[in-house]
Length: 260
Image (cartoon, rainbow, N blue to C red; front, side, top):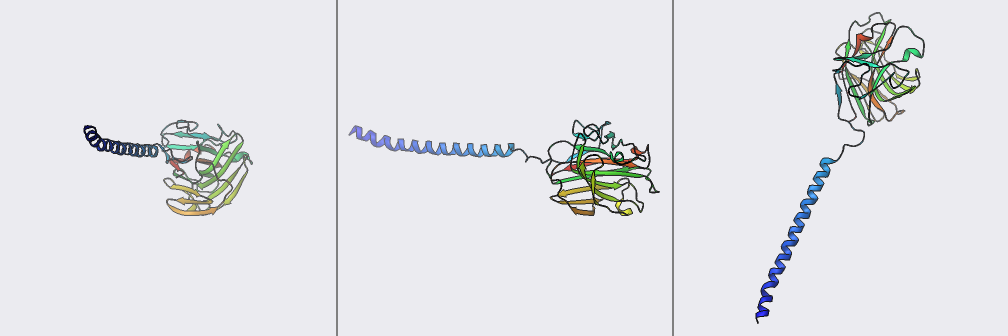
């Protein structure tokens, strides 16, 4: 009788302990899974080729522009083009200008951001321009670049160029650089004072899929479709023709690029 009494008392106690242990184990596993999932979400890297906006007001004096090794340059890295330089608050070109033959005159001052960028890109900059030419005999251009690349003797991608003048012969054009110096395809040409830019204007170019759209001060002025280049990097550039010694009269005072 005593043995039976002990068995009857201990059996439910043992069963309760088993259930409590199972519940505790379930809770521990559940909490561990939730914690692991939360940590994995927090630690998940951004998708390859996506950047938060790269912004700069060109705070350093550099020739060529580097900003901590973030830029490639036309002559330093591409050999056949020219570099971009900066003074505090201003980025401008180093091209000679003047009257030169093809293809030498197309050695635009060029700088592209480094890294792997996604194809959907936006570049935006604020124009700085003084002493704008009024007789139409000097070409001073500021340029935005999208899906571009540069390496020795090779430069590709899309160039969006704005004449730094508001004369009737001002323009905004889009060209596709095909590789060698001087080899490019003009995709779009416009003429008129509304397409030129002046000091303080904000220019922007965006390419989503095949569609490239251009803005001045938030107003859309050009849109076209092209699918030659599906990858590359954003950047800036400058062109001078018809005069020398005035390369520091035009450039950008700020720049932003993103592929989000």
